[in-house]
Length: 427
Image 1 (cartoon, rainbow, N blue to C red):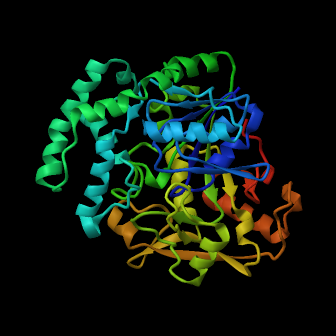
Image 2 (cartoon, rainbow, N blue to C red):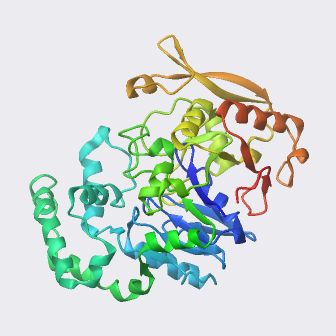
Image 3 (cartoon, rainbow, N blue to C red):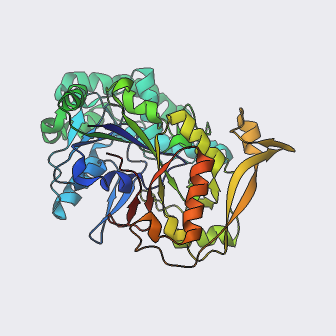
C-alpha cells in the first residue's frame, strides 16, 4: 500500500484538502507535516461545507486517523476551537494524534507577527499575523516551545522566560509595545495540557509502524511549492518546507518509503499576500475569475490575486517535488470562456525563458508568453468520466498535461466529494 504526498503545485489554495478527502476510505492516516493555521482547506461533504485550518482533512473520514506532525506549529486555542466545532457538527475527531515534537505558537508570537508587519510598511511580506513565522524562527533559534513541554511546568516556565528575555526587549524598545508576562504566558499554555495529553504520541513510530503493516498514509501539505521557504518566491514565502521533501522532515518518515507524489493545481492560478505573480490579471478577467471561483481565503477571507494557468510554474513544481501525478481542480470555473490563455514561457527583457529564471529579479520582471486554447460553453459539473467532458475541455486538460510534464490523474469539476473525474487512481 502506498505512502502518498499531496502538495500544492502553485501558490496555495489549489484544493489540496478536497484532493486528500476525496481519497476517502482508502486512506488509513492523513498527516499534516508543515505550516499551521495560516492556511485552510474547504471541503464539501454531502452539500455541507467544512473549513479546516489546522486539523488534517482525514478527520472527516471515520476510518482515517488524522495526524499533526512535528513540522507543524500549533496554536492550541485554534486546535481546540476546531475540534469543538467538528464535534458540534457530528464529526468525531477524537482519533487525532499530535507529535510531541510539534512547536506551539505562544501569544507573544502572534503579537510579534502583527507588529513586525506594521513596522515593515511597504516592505511587508503579507503574513496572516497568526504567529507562524516568529514561531518557526524560535524553532531555528532553539528557543521554541514544544507540545511535550506542556507536561513539565518547571521546564515550560524556563523556556517561556528564555524566549521573553529576547522578545520583551524588542517589544519595549523597538515596537513600543507592552512586554509579555512570563507567568501569565506559562499559565495560558498549561491550561491545555490535560486536554491534549491523550492525543500526543511519537508520530515517527506511529507512521513507520503503519507503513510496516501495509497501511496507506497520505501526507497533506500546507501552503504550496511557490511558498516554500527554500524553493518559493523568497522572501514572499511561508516559513516552512511546503514541498515534498518537507513531508519527510515534518513527519519522521524517510524518503525511500514514499511511493507517489501528487501535486494539486487549479485550472488557472491564484496567490495571496505580496510577491511577484507573472500571470496576474489586474482587470475584468481577474475579477471574473475571483468571483466565479469564490477566490477568498478560507482562513483570512482575503481576496486572492487571480491569473491564467502558468505552465512554467507547473514544470518547476514537477521537478522540485518529483511529481508522479497532478490533480487539476476547478476546471468547471472556466466554462463559458471563448478562449483560455495559458502561460507557456516568460519574456524577461526580450529573452524567452521556458523554465523558471534563476534569480528573483528576473522572475519579478517576467511577463507571460501565452498560447490560446478554445473554450467550451457546456456545464461540466455533472461529468464523471473524461469522455463526458466537452472536446475542448478534454483538449485543454491534455495540453496542460503535456506542458506541465506530468500526467493529470484527477480533474475537479465542482466542490463536492463526488465531483472528481479519476483518470488514474492515486491509491
